[in-house]
Image 1 (cartoon, rainbow, N blue to C red):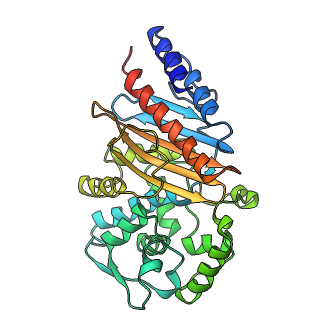
Image 2 (image 1 turned 180 degrees about the horizontal axis):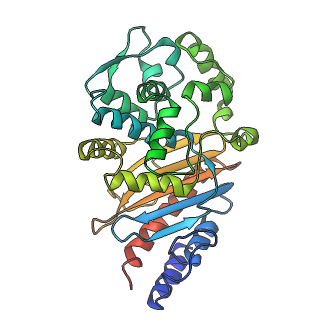
Image 3 (image 1 turned 120 degrees about the vertical axis):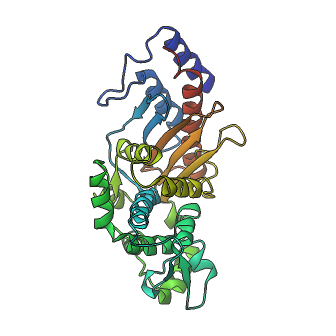
Length: 331
């Protein structure tokens, strides 16, 4: 299928039609056939998918269901990080400030809650952000969102950047209540862990009512706008931009998603999101010639195996990698 797609898009390039046909309902300048191929490649692997991508050098774009709202899950942590770094740039915080974690901010998380079992934990702002992105630690996210000023501050920052179609509404404590029906807090961790251990499918089974609620949604286009603004240095200082992109390059979650089918050692800086029937990945992929493209892959309503969902994202990433590498420079 991938080779067939490359034949299609390369033929379109030779015919000089690469700029002439966009996905219906979007302003993207990629041919309809590319979006249709992405849809075909992922069909049966996921429930519903949205894609947005842009070559950071040429500005060429690809959209599939780019205007549809999707649950962001943990990809919303990119917006939180940008807002927090804006406060660092303004001198309101320092990356070296030590922050005590409040007992009510503790939720099930891969680093903090799993390793720091005793009271009295304090982390630097830099380390809070590091584990929030690289390991998607939800306790760290509660702390980072508190430091950023809460969801309202994140939404003000997005509005300031001119990004519409994205909004942050909940803490990860709220997610614990709304999705897992579990109370947050250090005193509730043991019970929450027992519940998840006894019901492992809880984390990957879709919840249609949860996915349908309007909270914490973004269109692929909106998330792409945030990634583009970040890369172009329009969100935070040059130093803070390099800091966040560096963290994203160290992400360890979702190795089978954007990275899954790329050539070995391809640089990827990204943030994953996983919740029930939602499997997402957003970030930047570097091409062999040094160009980067930003990519957003949102999904929802998937009843397939988690490995199939990862494969769908990997198929999108590899197809776009080949498209931008082989086609996007053509006239």
